[in-house]
Image (cartoon, rainbow, N blue to C red; front, side, top):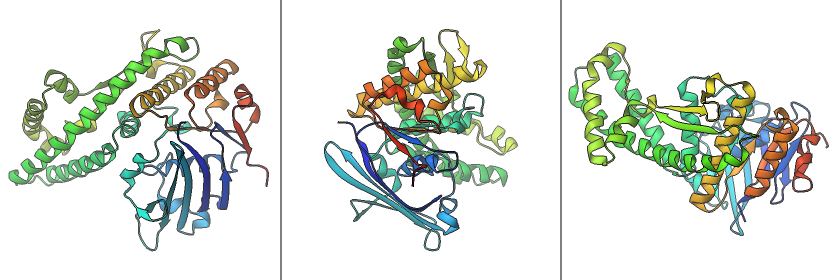
Length: 369
């Protein structure tokens, strides 16, 4: 049995003063008018991951009536074991939220991945292929930390060091020893980030090939990671050699970086390149519908890769995805979700969008008191 959320309780969260719901091991369809709180429930689930959820909002903005505090509790059934996950935030006490497992054990947010893995598609991602590279990089890193839990911590540590190096560049610092020390640390974190991404990329490529059978419904995607260091890694797969080459490039880039006041080489410059395989067309030139299909293909390939890697599926959050698909695509997506045996959480204003599941989904009407 794949992991699934059996209970969810929200307290002072967004538009919910208090709500408690129970769920079966099945796809969950949340139905209701705009503003009823469908996406808020998906966001609450996504908060049970490292980071700030599907909206990337401030925790202080998530509380009911600006009370400055909220609580989220979920019961997860995984391998027939009940796991209780809770997180609470109280602005007056701390800007950092508390996270508990089984009511007593406090953990860091990076450890959440060890209990619950989540992948999602939201309307905010509709322009991912025409947005700046940072959007695609963030998307790929979220997928990556579903496979390697330490990846989110690597990203945070790396970004902190980049900020520190950039500050020295802006100050025209002459403290070369300090800069060299930062660069050595950047290389250590940066190499691990690049290696993790490359491993996950290969997993996704393998499962994207499986999607040939769905090519008449969802576009086939070709993907690769583009960046100066990615090219260096291909030529220097031996990590010690790669680290030396990376450090050398950082050192040689200093004069240019001092002029531009920013670090111009590193995994923070990587881009995820996506092409529509059948048409041999870059994703950013595809139609809106084709771009949505490519995104769905990549996320579903990530779900299959997760099953191969972990032996179980992540929780899948699909915000307003079914509402923008035609009947044939809704049917194909429903069929694949059922085949994957994943607990997908879906939102729409119209219950008829989920008729393609037959009796294999649980429809919850949030309009009803």
